[in-house]
Length: 310
Length: 320
Image 1 (cartoon, helix red, strand yellow):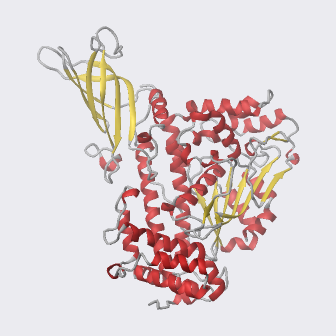
Image 2 (cartoon, chains in turn blue, orange):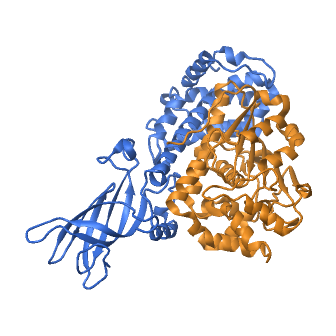
Image 3 (cartoon, chains in turn red, purple):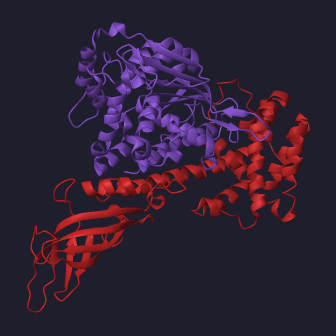
């Protein structure tokens, strides 16, 4: 039988719509109770419900699924701990729990889903709401943990979205708007399978604000270039925005650049014999080089002088 | 500032989520609407928890980063062709075209959907913490305008994606009422269909899936299906173009009509005193504000407060 002890809030027989709100001690008791639920609790709850309902189709399914959860060493595994361990893998498809085989993990999901789909309501009709709630404590504990985990994942995805699109995110010019709109069709640039935004973004800009580093025989000068690069967002907490500052930015970019034959501000990068190079941006701080006979080291800071242009 | 869902203690087994349309809404806004919903509920308002989904922060981020207007033009042109009215078509398409932007940016669509689902998860956890029996829990949604699109998308996504733990069968999350007011979902579906390959990530754009709009559901392991919504209700007005009516002429390509819905009501908006297509257009143009979302007053056929007022009695019947 289930080793379930009644707690005060569960014993509430208040009529529909008039349950007293749970106070903090009742919430703590609920949390403690949920934390105690194990795989064994879940299997036993379903077995009890199955015996009370006596539905042949349900019985066969419960028997089948429960038969995959018979290893003695997994019986005492807490359900909430399993949810937490599974969540540590960011890739949903690779989520595994060390103590369980894939078939066992799937069987737990199936059993909890079966309970909601085909047991809870008929059971309440057969044995009453109070008894049903008691029997369903393991199912509720499991689903509550999943829901809390899922909420945390939603908020994490929104935090990532803010990093990419929020007030501290790099602005886009009109060319980048078009490029990234088109790039949505490539799987790596669209929402990820776990529904997070892609950490990638295409960058393309005319930048007239690079400064060449002085060296023997030449002085520092403005250089205008055309850039094309790939921006990678860093999701790690503590990076990006004011919290991360200059040392731990929210994004890095690598790319190629083209400069015109001569240096100068607001020059065409395609004038005369163009010079090729590359650049790296650590947040908004950028370092680049132009190759060739007259090679240069360049520095600048990402800034949009005119909205939507450059 | 990070986005966070609203959290409240439940004082009974009933909660309502209000999902607004395009606006500059922040916590504390839509006070008039809230008052009108409470008035409609009557005494039940005291023990009905009302949540409001604030997602304009996400809209603003996207708008600022993507210059949505430039992307939107193609969609607005398609809408204008669909309206096919030489007198009001082009201008009306421009005025109501804002509702089309989520179609064009897959990540923004996903972000609003995630905010919506996070709010629902928070509501369920609040209900659990307030000792509400899952079998007694009654959550309703009232959405308006673009909020209807986000609601439609989020409910369909929740019904098929187990990772959100919100499926109607497997997690028992069934909404008591979902009331769509001036829904542009069919209009968006039509425009998206006509735009064809210009719409990204159709895999997760439920408005364009299938042969017709549908109520989300989940097939059950032992046979049958469970719907996500007990009462699917659609309300629009005879002068509301967002809800698929162009000066009393219902346009089937823009009017949301879902198989299996509980009720589909079309308000006769004659009393608003708008007597010509030009006057209707003027009313919508007057709602536009520079550098701010449109403001729909009570005399505008698209007013959310107007819909709530006209259906106060029905709302009380459904929601209490």
